[in-house]
Image (tube, rainbow, N blue to C red; front, side):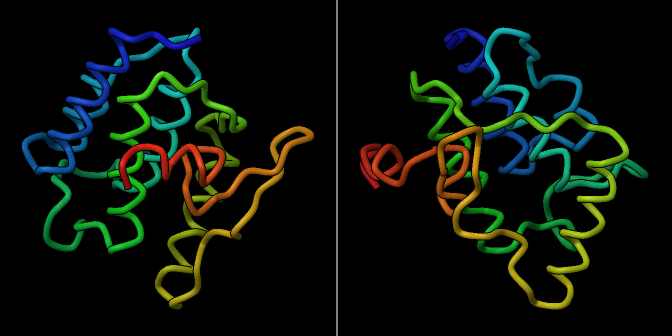
Length: 144
């Protein structure tokens, strides 16, 4: 289910985080939660993997996202503007995700891509290169 009001709020908070108007702590507190709209949980979980929980910072300097990560953040903003249902499985933040975050960071440091091009979600296959969109055609339909 799409929660339009919360998606609009989430889009604005994410834009402010991307534009370095908010710290990681402010982003975490202000990003809306919803049990009904899984896009909010999915995007929140993915963005959480981009910042340090150990200290307050903005997405600049050593925390500035690389080109691939910035593109993903921009797609998140576009997705939050849409009325598309979120079709990906939602990762829960916990020990498994902490280990995944460490593995992803290690791959980035070594120059390896942390994503495969396609990921299976239930019986469907989604295109990880356009996440949080599930299909490239949904992403391309956004005027890209």
